[in-house]
Image (cartoon, rainbow, N blue to C red; front, side):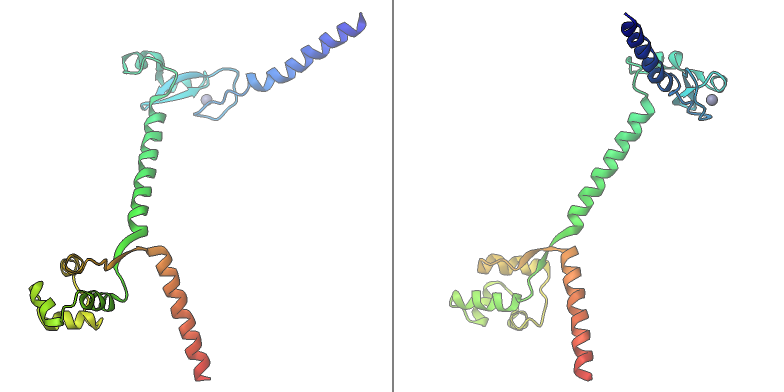
Length: 194
Ligand SMILES: [Zn+2]
Protein backbone atom coordinates (compact mmCIF):
# COMPACT_ATOMS: atom_id res chain seq x y z
CA UNK A 1 0.00 0.00 0.00
CA UNK A 2 2.72 2.47 0.98
CA UNK A 3 4.70 1.31 -2.02
CA UNK A 4 1.91 2.38 -4.35
CA UNK A 5 1.70 5.82 -2.79
CA UNK A 6 5.46 6.15 -3.05
CA UNK A 7 5.41 5.20 -6.72
CA UNK A 8 2.64 7.71 -7.44
CA UNK A 9 4.59 10.35 -5.57
CA UNK A 10 7.72 9.45 -7.51
CA UNK A 11 5.91 9.58 -10.84
CA UNK A 12 4.33 12.92 -10.09
CA UNK A 13 7.71 14.28 -9.00
CA UNK A 14 9.32 13.06 -12.24
CA UNK A 15 6.54 14.51 -14.35
CA UNK A 16 6.87 17.78 -12.47
CA UNK A 17 10.62 17.87 -13.10
CA UNK A 18 10.07 17.06 -16.74
CA UNK A 19 7.26 19.56 -17.04
CA UNK A 20 9.27 22.52 -15.77
CA UNK A 21 11.72 22.79 -18.68
CA UNK A 22 8.92 22.17 -21.15
CA UNK A 23 6.83 24.93 -19.63
CA UNK A 24 9.73 27.36 -19.52
CA UNK A 25 11.20 26.37 -22.88
CA UNK A 26 9.31 29.18 -24.57
CA UNK A 27 11.80 31.90 -25.35
CA UNK A 28 10.78 35.34 -26.40
CA UNK A 29 12.31 35.93 -29.80
CA UNK A 30 12.67 39.63 -29.12
CA UNK A 31 14.17 39.92 -25.65
CA UNK A 32 15.35 36.29 -25.29
CA UNK A 33 13.68 35.85 -21.92
CA UNK A 34 12.34 32.43 -20.94
CA UNK A 35 8.64 32.72 -20.29
CA UNK A 36 5.78 30.31 -19.56
CA UNK A 37 3.98 31.35 -22.70
CA UNK A 38 4.72 33.33 -25.83
CA UNK A 39 2.38 34.86 -28.31
CA UNK A 40 2.97 34.80 -32.06
CA UNK A 41 3.13 38.39 -33.23
CA UNK A 42 3.97 40.03 -36.50
CA UNK A 43 7.00 42.31 -36.34
CA UNK A 44 8.02 44.01 -39.59
CA UNK A 45 6.54 41.19 -41.64
CA UNK A 46 8.15 38.35 -39.64
CA UNK A 47 6.38 36.08 -37.21
CA UNK A 48 8.03 36.23 -33.81
CA UNK A 49 7.03 34.45 -30.61
CA UNK A 50 7.00 37.22 -28.05
CA UNK A 51 6.59 37.39 -24.32
CA UNK A 52 3.61 39.40 -23.08
CA UNK A 53 5.96 42.27 -22.34
CA UNK A 54 7.28 42.45 -25.92
CA UNK A 55 3.96 41.59 -27.56
CA UNK A 56 2.94 45.24 -27.54
CA UNK A 57 5.68 46.00 -30.10
CA UNK A 58 4.17 43.66 -32.69
CA UNK A 59 0.95 43.45 -34.62
CA UNK A 60 -1.63 40.75 -34.01
CA UNK A 61 -0.29 37.73 -35.94
CA UNK A 62 -3.58 35.94 -36.59
CA UNK A 63 -5.30 38.97 -38.03
CA UNK A 64 -2.44 39.60 -40.42
CA UNK A 65 -2.14 35.93 -41.31
CA UNK A 66 -5.81 35.60 -42.21
CA UNK A 67 -5.31 37.91 -45.15
CA UNK A 68 -2.23 35.99 -46.34
CA UNK A 69 -2.51 33.11 -48.79
CA UNK A 70 -1.39 30.30 -46.47
CA UNK A 71 -4.38 29.10 -44.47
CA UNK A 72 -2.38 26.75 -42.23
CA UNK A 73 -0.94 29.52 -40.14
CA UNK A 74 1.44 27.07 -38.45
CA UNK A 75 4.41 27.62 -40.73
CA UNK A 76 5.84 31.09 -40.53
CA UNK A 77 6.00 32.37 -44.08
CA UNK A 78 9.24 34.39 -43.90
CA UNK A 79 11.20 31.33 -42.75
CA UNK A 80 10.19 29.22 -45.73
CA UNK A 81 11.05 32.08 -48.04
CA UNK A 82 14.52 32.25 -46.54
CA UNK A 83 14.97 28.47 -46.75
CA UNK A 84 13.86 28.49 -50.36
CA UNK A 85 16.28 31.27 -51.15
CA UNK A 86 19.14 29.41 -49.42
CA UNK A 87 18.35 26.20 -51.29
CA UNK A 88 18.26 28.03 -54.58
CA UNK A 89 21.57 29.70 -53.82
CA UNK A 90 23.10 26.33 -52.91
CA UNK A 91 21.89 24.80 -56.16
CA UNK A 92 23.29 27.74 -58.12
CA UNK A 93 26.69 27.34 -56.48
CA UNK A 94 26.72 23.59 -57.18
CA UNK A 95 25.94 24.20 -60.84
CA UNK A 96 28.69 26.76 -61.02
CA UNK A 97 31.12 24.28 -59.45
CA UNK A 98 30.30 21.66 -62.07
CA UNK A 99 31.04 24.13 -64.84
CA UNK A 100 34.25 25.43 -63.34
CA UNK A 101 35.49 21.98 -62.26
CA UNK A 102 35.63 20.46 -65.72
CA UNK A 103 36.01 21.83 -69.21
CA UNK A 104 36.93 20.48 -72.61
CA UNK A 105 40.45 21.48 -73.49
CA UNK A 106 42.82 20.78 -76.36
CA UNK A 107 44.96 17.70 -75.75
CA UNK A 108 48.69 18.24 -75.27
CA UNK A 109 49.84 16.18 -78.26
CA UNK A 110 47.27 17.54 -80.72
CA UNK A 111 49.96 17.86 -83.44
CA UNK A 112 50.88 14.20 -83.24
CA UNK A 113 47.18 13.23 -83.25
CA UNK A 114 46.49 15.27 -86.40
CA UNK A 115 49.59 14.01 -88.21
CA UNK A 116 49.02 10.32 -87.45
CA UNK A 117 45.32 10.56 -88.36
CA UNK A 118 46.17 12.32 -91.62
CA UNK A 119 48.81 9.70 -92.50
CA UNK A 120 46.40 6.90 -91.63
CA UNK A 121 44.05 8.34 -94.26
CA UNK A 122 46.92 8.30 -96.78
CA UNK A 123 46.87 12.06 -97.31
CA UNK A 124 49.93 14.21 -97.58
CA UNK A 125 50.04 17.65 -96.00
CA UNK A 126 49.11 19.44 -99.22
CA UNK A 127 46.16 17.19 -100.05
CA UNK A 128 44.80 17.37 -96.56
CA UNK A 129 45.20 21.15 -96.29
CA UNK A 130 43.36 21.65 -99.58
CA UNK A 131 40.56 19.29 -98.54
CA UNK A 132 39.75 21.41 -95.51
CA UNK A 133 40.52 24.76 -97.19
CA UNK A 134 43.38 25.62 -94.91
CA UNK A 135 46.91 26.75 -95.70
CA UNK A 136 49.58 24.06 -95.77
CA UNK A 137 51.76 26.12 -93.45
CA UNK A 138 48.98 26.35 -90.88
CA UNK A 139 48.47 22.58 -90.78
CA UNK A 140 52.24 21.98 -90.72
CA UNK A 141 52.60 24.26 -87.72
CA UNK A 142 49.68 22.58 -85.96
CA UNK A 143 51.23 19.14 -86.59
CA UNK A 144 54.48 20.44 -85.11
CA UNK A 145 52.56 21.54 -81.98
CA UNK A 146 53.74 25.01 -82.94
CA UNK A 147 50.32 26.56 -83.50
CA UNK A 148 47.29 26.14 -81.27
CA UNK A 149 44.22 25.85 -83.50
CA UNK A 150 41.13 27.83 -82.53
CA UNK A 151 37.88 26.09 -81.65
CA UNK A 152 36.56 26.37 -85.21
CA UNK A 153 39.66 24.76 -86.69
CA UNK A 154 39.71 22.09 -83.97
CA UNK A 155 36.16 21.16 -84.90
CA UNK A 156 37.10 21.10 -88.57
CA UNK A 157 40.13 18.85 -87.97
CA UNK A 158 38.14 16.52 -85.71
CA UNK A 159 35.42 16.12 -88.35
CA UNK A 160 37.84 15.67 -91.27
CA UNK A 161 40.04 13.12 -89.49
CA UNK A 162 37.46 11.39 -87.23
CA UNK A 163 39.50 12.17 -84.16
CA UNK A 164 38.96 13.86 -80.84
CA UNK A 165 41.37 16.66 -80.07
CA UNK A 166 39.74 17.71 -76.82
CA UNK A 167 39.57 16.03 -73.46
CA UNK A 168 37.58 16.58 -70.30
CA UNK A 169 39.83 18.37 -67.87
CA UNK A 170 39.23 18.83 -64.17
CA UNK A 171 40.59 22.30 -63.58
CA UNK A 172 41.12 21.70 -59.86
CA UNK A 173 43.14 18.50 -60.38
CA UNK A 174 45.11 19.92 -63.24
CA UNK A 175 46.02 23.03 -61.27
CA UNK A 176 47.27 20.88 -58.42
CA UNK A 177 49.38 18.60 -60.59
CA UNK A 178 50.88 21.41 -62.65
CA UNK A 179 51.83 23.36 -59.56
CA UNK A 180 53.35 20.21 -58.08
CA UNK A 181 55.25 19.64 -61.30
CA UNK A 182 56.65 23.15 -61.41
CA UNK A 183 57.59 22.86 -57.77
CA UNK A 184 59.51 19.60 -58.33
CA UNK A 185 61.19 21.09 -61.39
CA UNK A 186 62.29 24.08 -59.40
CA UNK A 187 63.65 21.77 -56.77
CA UNK A 188 65.54 19.59 -59.31
CA UNK A 189 66.97 22.72 -60.94
CA UNK A 190 68.10 23.85 -57.54
CA UNK A 191 69.71 20.46 -56.84
CA UNK A 192 71.43 20.45 -60.26
CA UNK A 193 72.88 23.91 -59.68
CA UNK A 194 74.43 22.71 -56.45
ZN1 LIG B 1 10.20 39.64 -24.63
